[in-house]
Image 1 (cartoon, one colour):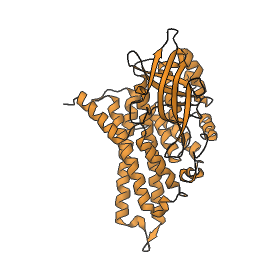
Image 2: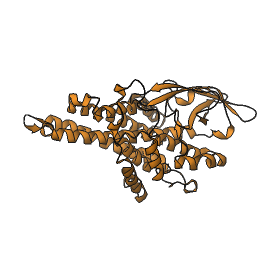
Image 3: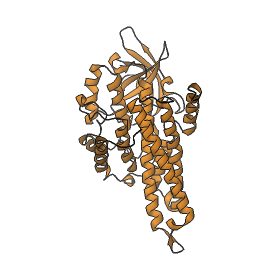
Length: 379
């Protein structure tokens, strides 16, 4: 593959840097100092600026007001957002919109896509199943009535931005054949119940309960591969967020160790410190290489020895393990100061743990990769 970014992708990065330049991760109260969520809503002002910069519509076709770019461009923007811990549903909104664009009817595309790209409609995705460890599509049962209406029953946990998004894209399995479908469920709808959950980041999540919720047929994406495609994009985007967070933390650590003196010298000059930061730099470069490989595979549809899911699994393994090691080393080198809840590093550590586990920790993806290797022998 070619790791060179196109002019359009580079332009998206520059636009993202301009938008996120004024976002201060320490401007939000620490979750350790609050009794509930750090905020009731996502950052609406930042959301509007992303819309004005056309960063919410990057992957939409020009016919729907988008730039027609790919997952690589999205990951470049997500990396910048994570450096500032941007509190917006950028990944979820874009992934849901792409699913509608790829698998939705013309009527649904007309209703949803332009509004999602302009920021007037905020979408999120329920991707964690009942517990966060089981397949999300098995957590909800969908059956189709004779009039074409779908009836959904089940529960999804840890749905991000559910209290503030306008609709949630919910994976479910059909009662008769067990195939996966995606239902675009309005946040306020009969049979839809939200129960508050607080993540390690201090953000407000929701347990989404569907109690015989009736969804019109045009809001259900009933196509082979729709959920798998959405899941791979979400996982790859999560890897981009982990990379951006790790880059930000390593830069923060380099600046601190360059100023912090011990025995009359900056601790950055000590061999033990240099070795640890060098190891974390290697982690980040491995995270980066595997991320771009995964993003390229799901964007291009290029053939490989394994399906694209294998590349995504490798990227998520590196992202989960790498981001954990980066923040742990940063905490160690910052000493007690790094554990201070007034220090921005505290929030980066909380977000890193959330990203490490989101859509499955490293062992889950190692198991998935093993299954792929067993079913696609390379020899």
